[in-house]
Image (cartoon, rainbow, N blue to C red):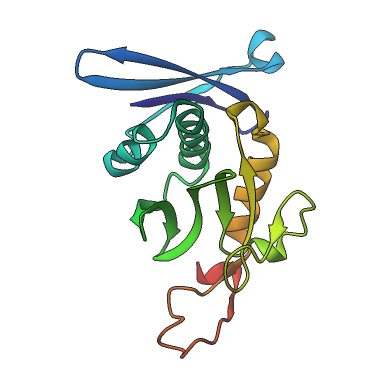
Amino acid sequence: MIMTFKTKAFSLRNSILSILLPNRRFYIVKAYTDAIHNGCKAKLKTDVMNKEIQAYNDSQSLADREVCNRLSVEINNYLDAGESKIWHAHPVWFINGNPIVGYSKLKAGVRLMFWSGADFDEPDLKINTGKFKDASITYTSAEQINVDDVTRWLVKSKEIQWDYKNLVKRKGVLIRLDHDEE
């Protein structure tokens, strides 16, 4: 179970506290912000993490597991309407069957990849680390993850999408989706 405080008015910075209970692991995301301290009411949101993704995260080394858990929490917080699953052996989130974001373990660390990230115009994202219009960033520790950056990239991932879902049908031709086609 993932619990987070969310508010539309303020950007929240999250920290993860992992609590191991008998036969179940719960990740509690503690949100803190000046707005909450000043009396702003925050909405409590609860989601259940995909069990396959949690198994993937749990199979990583301690440092990589922390990165994977942090990324999955941040992605789930923003793409709550999206579908998530293990796809080509890695956690991936989709919107209407179109891959949006995912992460994978590499020798250098954990790579967070946005399928349409090449068009985000973000200097921290390395372009064309895979195929087509992707961009990514690699983390070696959870402390390197800037929540504001990840949230901004997730916003852009909803607005800027290339149609990977129909790539085979279009014989390798990738077209950009209009924002209302999502």
